[in-house]
Image (cartoon, rainbow, N blue to C red; front, side, top):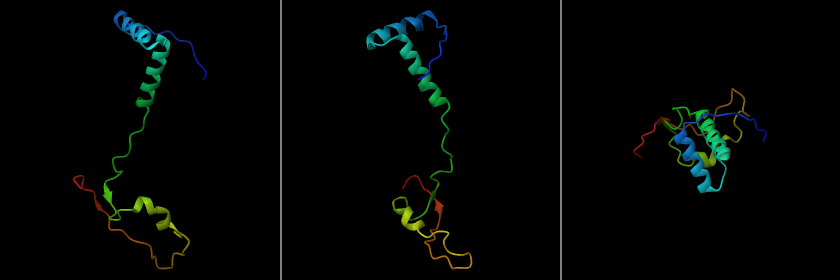
Length: 97
């Protein structure tokens, strides 16, 4: 890990709390600051899931477990061939199920 030296100004009360916490944990204040910055930046840059994920119900309870079987041969047939795969009836998911 490449590190870059920086200066951070903290108010006196926060600095005292940081030093005390670091001493209690047997770690340096710098380690705790690096950990806090890493956690904050990970959360702040996390992409939320699209709201559309999980709103439809295929009606096939084991779809996730059998997806490879269900997709076997998908796209191998010509466009003129009748499609014989399972055609689920999609319906909105009810979250009280």
